[in-house]
Image 1 (cartoon, rainbow, N blue to C red):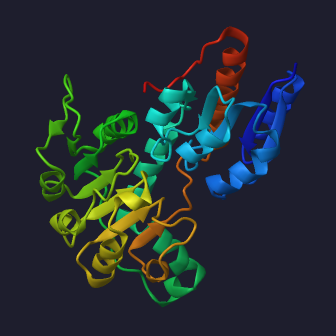
Image 2 (image 1 turned 90 degrees about the vertical axis):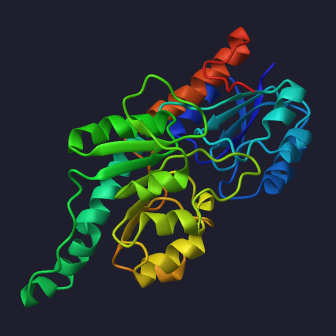
Length: 316
């Protein structure tokens, strides 16, 4: 008997091809929609669906769990769990898996955004294209080298970033609510203390269900008018109105932002600021990383339905 799966449609094509080659029946739903839309679209097959291919921003909310009574496994193509109801999944015996293979690419983009914000690379590109170089040299940027680097959230992405920053001749501090041992980087007692001690602050913290803002106005003001803020985590972890205001009024020096509070909508005021580098949530968007993530999703589903185990399950 064929195994039925529900799937968000933005998986890599080879994932669907391999699943169908193995005899799975895949019911696809469009990306960028609510779980209620998913539940409605999958309703005709709800009594048959045993596996779900989800994304990091969609996850597995309780409403979707309730809508799929035969669900055994949810393979998330990503590592974010803030939209996944782990207690509800555990209560139903549903295994949740992620794709913990993206950390290096995300850390690379953090470095790129920090450097681009300091050296005004995006602004310089616009300067050349607009013909302004013919009228004179553009204003100076700031060095990325030798700075006080702060990392807010020292999980696997934060640690991958810290190892990269070691090559830039500065000092590295961090704050994480979970105690860390055996590390050479300097721990700070609070996020605000970390901001005060940083020239460039990287947000690498994971979101959590029901979690709120962790980068508020007080932290951004502590970073100061020469400080640089880089976010490759989640937009809603930041007081975005305060961030925009401080960038526009000189309370914060510059920012490199890959994520926003209401994606894909970006605050219009940000679009006109030269001291901000903006990217459209592309931290893991490399061909190599997408391949690894797709292979991880496949491995979890195939192994679950053939051997009764998952490769990268989330502890819940």
